Image (cartoon, rainbow, N blue to C red; front, side, top):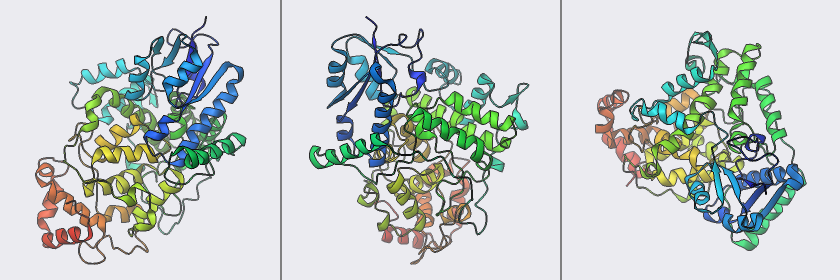
Length: 501
């Protein structure tokens, strides 16, 4: 009897059913399990729960009689019902908890991971060859490009440079409310989405399962067909304008020219290889400049792949790293996505975007939400959990390195060379948020002092020894020492709560 093949809810693309030595048997019966316990353990964003369930149920509808779709309390119960004690294969899951589960089950054979560019052994060989310490993303990115012959010409980087950040970090156009970029692909909901929404309502009403944030209409692809349409829309119409303003922020234009493909990649609806090759094709066919193509390829083949590999390479204890000894609990307004409780326009806007859509692009994540958490000294494990729960593209493997290593510098520099935080001047330069705000980005004391500015200097003061010893941050300490009103800045921060206890 052919082994059944179990698909997790983030393994929904055709490449998870491709047969072969490291894949399921040809035409293997498929198992999909909808486990309510997943939603009991964490209070997820409602739009995220909707997207995942919609994607799973759409995949089941596509597979028809080939699939056994089980709704159960736990994965163990669902597998017993679906497989009846028979043998099962499953591709390597994306979280340590899920991997531990499948390895603990009898008659379950774990196949190599799919949905990424390199096997873990290849990365481990690369990392071990560097001593396992200085694992900088830029070095990894060069290695990936060479190995895949991606955006390369005759062994050299296309366009003559590995890195086009110089062209891709422009502030928003002066006076513009939007970039006027072509609109992104938007899916249309159907009867499956209606069923999902009704079930979520019932879970909240009868099952004691709760969510955060708002749901609907669905903004992100839930099927392979929708994901491919979104990819074509981006590479054919939006990629050309992506690069220059990828680090900019506009209050009225949260999407700008970003791809909105991360959730499709992380659900397994798209394979990263097809995505980066589509971007390269757009450049080679003259549809996008090299700077935009390189900036996007860097996000997928550089950063996404890097984060996946580091999640496994660093080990489980990485989750508990807290090099800056940040212990402050997350406040209720942040946990509840209560944007109306926030006065600073930039933070309120970013939080409202998360509340309404379960998404913001990478700069609000890092330089508004993450930077505020870093300045406030919020406990990094709780911050990681918040990003995991509240973003439609958030999974354990995504958020653990991104938050612990990149955003909160909780690993003490194993992943990045410096903490990523700033005062209000950066936000003012890279966005239009400061206009109309109750605070002034240049004020560090008084009633109109920007909380990011006071928070930044309070952070530098609190960690001055660490920052002074780092050549990438030593100038910040020198700047602190030149301030003539440090005590007043710190007093402003304490009185307004911009300083952890």
